[in-house]
Image (cartoon, rainbow, N blue to C red; front, side, top):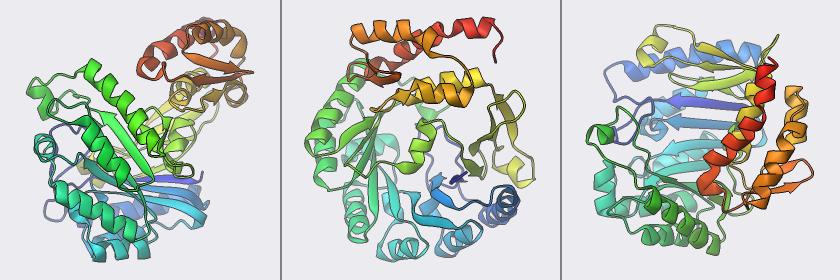
Length: 374
């Protein structure tokens, strides 16, 4: 296993749309987190000591940690990195300056995922962001000057937003990667409690404009919500989309590990911070071969390159193509898929309707459910 996700739950502000496991700083919590993380990392390293090809520090806001805390965080991780490994750290613009970026470079970080969300002041206030337009632009400028690979996060389709302006600004900055999402109003968030509603039509239009405007600037849509210049794709996230295996550390983090017996894989999810600090182990879910195959279809069709059903068959030990072929070719005739051999690729038309495409393919696999081939 060559990929590791580390969850850092601390944030300077709790945004009203966020449903990730995040907390504000409280006396002693960061120190306790770092101590527990070191213990957890040592235990995981004993069973998985292989060098890492990708390391992703997410949150939360990892860049919100103080300098000595960041140093302790990296010192808590005993793994070696492969030559050319991708080391990504999520950061908010207001937490970066030249000195902080120099420290991150010294610690081995080579890719920054910046939570910009928008360059428009009314939108940033609506989203509860701690930075403004000037701070976002300055953070991008400094990160590029510092030699980092830079990815921007944008939220598109908001009611007061000039979508094309945000996309044009992102494209003009010279970053190698943009992650563009539409607002999901999740249960229990302040936005949900306010009764805020999503606008599917506006959001679909916004994603179409993202593909057009970012594409004109050389940022090609390689995944439903992700755009990159050639060679700038997020290597760590592709492990998720290809339904691979990865290690996980920290409260709320989820990892996927090789299975045993009748399980193809085990998915382990760590508890929230207070229970995690007390030493509570992660919960474990067994993923059957058929579940793995269905998830691989769902995730692989998010990618422009699609997926090779023969490879999924090899991993899962199941015969899938005889069941899938009819539905796949029907979807191809309707313009939603390209079928080449056993490879399925989504068309541009499919991206906004991907849920229905996947459900149709899943329905074709129902005979395996009834045969009990789990």
